[in-house]
Amino acid sequence: MFIAVAVIVLVVGSVLFHFLSPWYLTELASNWSAIDDTITITFWVTGFVFVVVNLFMAYCIIRFRYDKNRRSEYEPENKKLEWWLTGITTIGVAAMLAPGLWVWYDFVNVPEDAMEVEAVGQQWHWTYRFPGADGQLGTVHPKFFSNDNPFGIDPDDPRGQDDVLVDSPEVRLPLGQPVKLLLRSKDVLHNFTVAQFRVKMDLVPGLVSYMWFTPTRTGKFEVLCEELCGVGHHIMRGMVVVEEPDDFATWLAAQPTFAELAAIPAGDPQVGQQLYAVCGACHGSRGEGIAALNAPKLAGQEAWYLSRQLSYYQSGVRGAHPDDVYGQQMAPMVSMLGSDQAMRDVIAHIETFPDEPVEATIAGNVDRGRKIYQVCGSCHGWEGQGIAALKAPRQAGVQDWYLARQLNNFKQGIRGAHPEDLYGQQMIQMANILVNDRAVTDVVAYINTLPQKPTQIAMTAGEED
Image 1 (tube, rainbow, N blue to C red):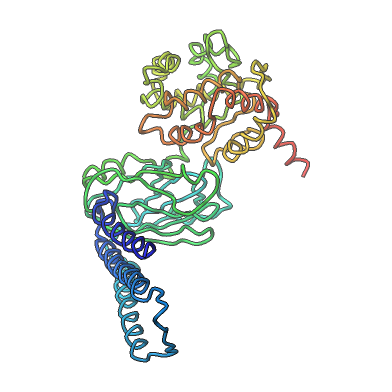
Image 2 (image 1 turned 60 degrees about the vertical axis):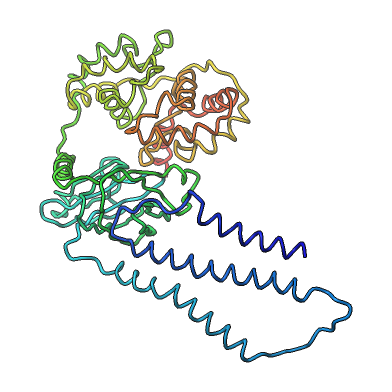
């Protein structure tokens, strides 16, 4: 009797939880209400079966409980019952599958007026590509991948010259316009999902898959990867911003094309030498960093990372937090670089500095730090050399006191909390694996043991090969 009561309570509790629970589907933001209807039908069919089967089981426990004065009857077959079960099961399965087939038919038939957009996934971020004025996307191939050509566009394909490139996890789309999203992976399996759009699709290396939808309301919607793609899977997030068509057109016109990026002039180190005079007062005349002034070493750091941080300081993404004392000092100094070309010039001058080794000032448990760094190395490289494709800067050869400070800043949300610092938000989540100050000290102590010139070491190995 106790088991029967427990089963009945389970059924009643499950039904109440379903109807009273605050957790359900997010608000719909696309044309795919049919998917919601399909999910609802599935809930009703499976819910009905769940309730009937469990209540029948409780009834049987009560009705046919042990009685020493009653004998059981052996009935190996009951054709009438079997026909009923077969018929009801067939109806239930058809009710669940048939709506899905209709939805899938709509899903694979993309409207002719759909705007094509390419979403590129890689560990662990998203980038996007729009066709230019010719309405066609250029050819891509893995052999063209480089730091200067992260999309792998064929430079000899004229159709790719006007492709609009969005090298950011945030993309914008126009309200009410059907969008065909072409999905391409640069490394492993990924999955493009926006919960409010309902549709999702895998990205398979070597293939181009697709999905389509029509945004039906403005707003910001988070992009998730729902295919386990590595240690940083949980931080592979982006943002889709749906806005009015005129606002979208303005935004799209401001994005660079492949030809425009290729035509950007290189930095002039001689011009940069003059601009660097202000920087050198804190960071040292040769970019060696001055600990007494809380100014880190610049020599040896990658140009792409320096460019991103200078842009962050100029736009207020970094250095605006009230507790980021040293970041607040940097922000007005960077504002003196009045243009993007000025930033390229000063970075070109920094690249001429010798990459001198730094002195270790933090001691910790290197063995414990090595274990912790197994997570860090997935992005920053096993020698701390940095991996531009993963947007992860160099760690080896950076002063340990600066690394410790930045890790603590990420942990406390002093750095990376700005809504436009999407890579900083990733670091906040990863830095949380450092559960205490000792963990920070240990991992930094291990980084101190890594080769301080990993880039040169890698080049030497390549030359020997």
